[in-house]
Image (tube, rainbow, N blue to C red; front, top):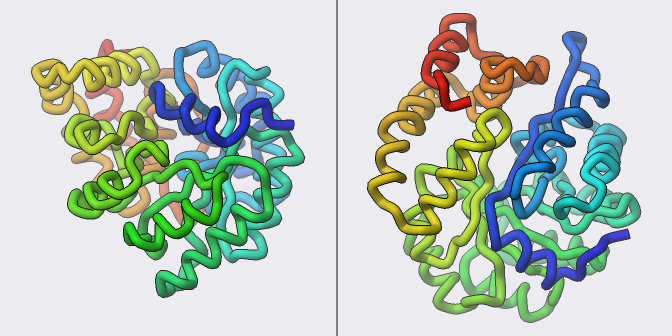
Length: 304
């Protein structure tokens, strides 16, 4: 049973850095629950405002519904209420509804609604998809605006008016004009989350548009660094932010951009680089090669 109502959950998430834990796999690609729980116990001791189980970095797209439920329940049990746990929902509307209802039954604190599978659609279709999930649960919903699920400000405002439990907007598009229109129209009605790959890159300019938090994949393997960087962003310490962007984040992105899918693969490689192996990524993703892993390990250096 969720411990927070939607408004409380959204306020909590907006108050600090967000963690998107990887999902641990064995070499045969089966879920390694013991290793996952051990890592969650470690991460939950850090001051983050929310853990997103089986999200994009957690390879949601490669998990079965049964595995998602197992990952989510392990996260809820292991964190023991130390931080809100947000569950994923996605794919087609019917499956997303089932996932949201299963997450509520498991005791999640909220839902991250990922884009529907594959198809493009009009605003009316996206609105119907999101509204169906909102109506199916009492949990707070954060809609992930990216890829084939991009809402305009008018559609989003209508959804907010009709669905009080739609409380968050995660941006994975990077359209500054759209974000400005959304925030100008809705203000504090929503909690805004930065969700572009390697969100640290956009954290400072997005803060000026009301985006007070972001999903840090780097937190998986460099939690102290990630929290220090976030603090620099919130202080608007431009010198500190750009020093770390230049020294670490931009070289990290250069490795990430070499192959498709590396936005997730490089996070698991980072876990290996700091001695916390989380197993391989599942296909269709591919792991970093030995040379790229060595390069990443050297870049991490003494930041661990």
